Image (cartoon, rainbow, N blue to C red; front, top):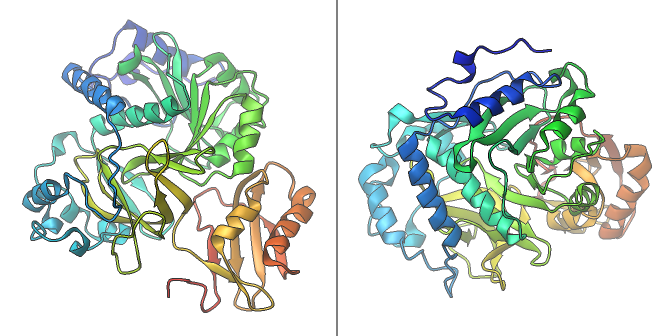
Amino acid sequence: MNAPLPDDELFSPRRFPVLGAAGRAMLRRLVDHPGAPRYRDRSGHRLGRLDIWQARMRHWGIQRAEMPWPLDARLPPAWGDAWVAAMAATVPAARGLAGRRWAEIPLVRRADLSAALHRYMPGDAPVDRLICFSTSGTTGHPLKVPSLPRVAADYQAFHRRALRHFGIEPRAGRGDVGIVLAGFQQRCFTYVSVNPLQGECGLAKLNLAPTEWQDACDRARYLDDLAPELISGDPISLAELTRLGLRHRPRALLSTSMALSDGLRRELEWRFRCPVLDLYSMNEVGPIGVFDPQLDGHLLLQPRLHVEIVDAQGLPLPYGAHGEVVVSGGFNPCLPLLRYATGDHARLEMSPRGPVLRGLVGRAPVRFRSPSGEWLNNVEISQALAPLSLVRFALHQQADGNLVLAVDALEPLDSIASRLRDALEDRFGEPLPLSLVPLVTDDKLRQYTSDLPGHDPTC
């Protein structure tokens, strides 16, 4: 059993400026439970009474705001000119951009932020309340994302928009555990907190890796006793949940950070008898969209985030055209984004529910060559493998044309090897020089890579 935390450390006024009796009891329950994991870090909402009131007002507006829906996807947002002017006055990298045509504003990439983050932060950012967290990403450009307590609080407003789309209104309140954020890594940031916007209901960020628990069996015992209303994680940690034998069924699962296959989504929905929300989200900008199977795409969530699709020259494309996803705006005042190129690719289209990203593919597109010389786009690979219950996979083509498919699946690799091979060979239309190997990394990875010349369809 973990050593008990002293009150002055667990109830720190710096982390919890407002903390009532219900919040104190919840924090004690989360850390003193006999099956609790090792919570290695300390965190809290850091919201004062004024912050809480302001957050409630913002969330009220976010829930009722309509998504902008211009007739021409190439048009800038209605607030674009004012946004550029405000940034030009406070953000060093935006100086001189006021008055320029939208399409002439240069794109900003993660490498730019990584190399000189200070140039993309407003000079009047409240540094006394600044929070920075690190993200490694998949592009080789580690980044510290500046943030504020209000930004972390506002995530739940956009998650509520996504949940409402599936008919779910969160009900957790005093004495309940609202959400568990589940990781499954060798090392991850773990802590307990409470949500002052929902009656100080509980929040736990935990690591499902067995080494973080007194006993591996405690994972199911702890989660069943906490009975969280929502569980959030990535495909790796959510797949681990299926192996724990949980009795508890949350009202919804939220998958973030990595692409979620259709097969795994259906497996999770069947196992837990609840909706599984596939959120397209980035540390730099927060939740962008939620996947709706009926719309076959990610429905956009942020009314003040302009999403455009651009070509290789950075020029905006019309609805239905495939290109790179570029975002502007957002809800983080410490990192106001102006034409930020995400490295992801999709089509922006209209739907009965609003603007939707279809055919979303993480990072740059890659094509693969068959033995007969035909090229196949990585989107078709995703489509071919989507029906299988894969947690993650990565496909690489070597310089000699041989393919290596690394797989992390709910089933043993040997039992699905023939289905994997059949799915790819059916799409390629011929037998393949294909090797199947287990995917063992516990971090994000590039899903599609190639050493063959000509693999980049944009060149």
